[in-house]
Length: 177
Image (cartoon, rainbow, N blue to C red; front, side, top):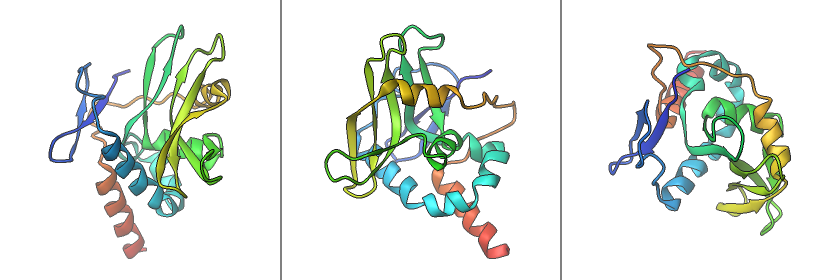
C-alpha cells in the first residue's frame, strides 16, 4: 500500500506527496478551519453523492487536509485520513460529538492518544460556532470506530482530486441528471 501525504502550498493549492516530508503537516489553524468550513458547508452535496464518492477512487482518496489518527504503540503510528473515510465516519454518526462551547455538532477530524491506556482526545470542527474544538473524549471510542473502517488501497494511476474539484464535479453531475 502506498502512503500519501498532503499539504497546502503558499498559493492555497493542496499538494500530494508519496513519501515523508517534514513540511507535510505544517499548516496554519486558519487554513485548516477554512478547509473544514468549506467541507462541512458542502456536506449536503457530499451526502447526496456519498455512493459516487465511496465508489470512485479519485473522489474517495481526495485529501482531507491534515486529518489523521495518531496512536502510540499500534503499527503505523500516524494514519492520514481522506474525504471518503471522513464521510463514512460522519454519515454513520461515528465521528460526531457535542461542542463544549455552544452545544452544537462537532465533526471530528483528528484523534491522538494511546489505545492501550485509553488516554487521548479528538479535535474537530463545530458547525454552529465555526471553530476548531479540541479535547473531545473518549479517545478509545473514536479510535475503535476508525479502525473498523475497511482498508482501501490507492492503485497506481489514481490521482485524487482537491475538495474544490470534487465539489465542482458533483455540481456538474447534478446539472446533467
